[in-house]
Length: 180
Image 1: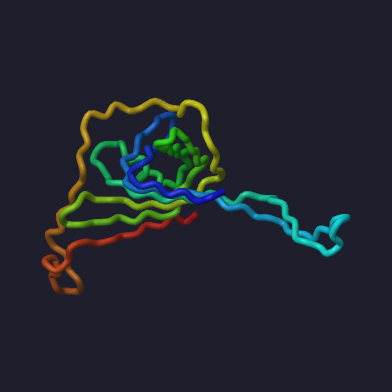
Image 2: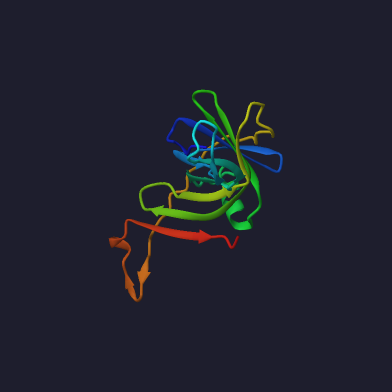
């Protein structure tokens, strides 16, 4: 199966605990590879062998996305799944009306992008048990969201050793990895 990568053309929904969360993201990529077994094949017309193969196992699907962290619970579901390693499903709707489903997802690592002049962002990557086309209605109910409040971090004091380097730093990156 090919790898897919979308920037601004896809809608992403996370379904966890019967609730469907629309995730604000500017980029998502996902894909799945397969293992195959090769063997020699001879035909009646050609006694020299050629290589045949059979796909015998699907590897876990992989995904990554980048999203702003909001004060509301909308994107907090991803932050919480990064901390507790609970599974969830991701549905990706494209502009061509294709819907892809990543089943039983788990986040392996998250990278917090902290910048003085931009909203706090979380880049996550993880694995899913299966990637498939989806042709039904996405399950779950949408939470009532009335506002979108971005978190803009303030880097007032940043010390390195005993020196204050706050004026010299524009951004930081902090990574959290699950022990999966």
